Image (cartoon, rainbow, N blue to C red; front, side, top):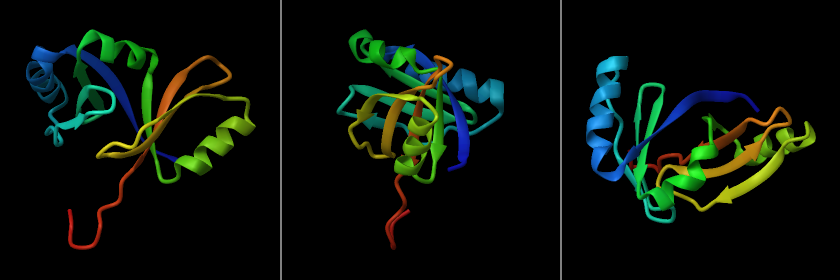
Length: 126
């Protein structure tokens, strides 16, 4: 299962989310995507080019800080199966979010990556 995109997670304090998004817009020249509130984790996220800005209370950010990269994929199940066959360890299946479904895996080399299968838009919806 191919990786579609790689996003570098950047962590910001709750009250610095907008300023951090503006910084990465300036650095990348990319427009910010929509800001998404992920109630299950207590995090707020915005994609800016190759950067995923995440903010929240420190208690909400702490578990996410081990993630070094977020990969988007077409099939979370297929990618997870492939990674497990290559010796990866499932760290955590994450609750569904407005963006889609995700799992956190530790690769045999120690890299902790989050894999995100983006939700497909329904007919008649963006």
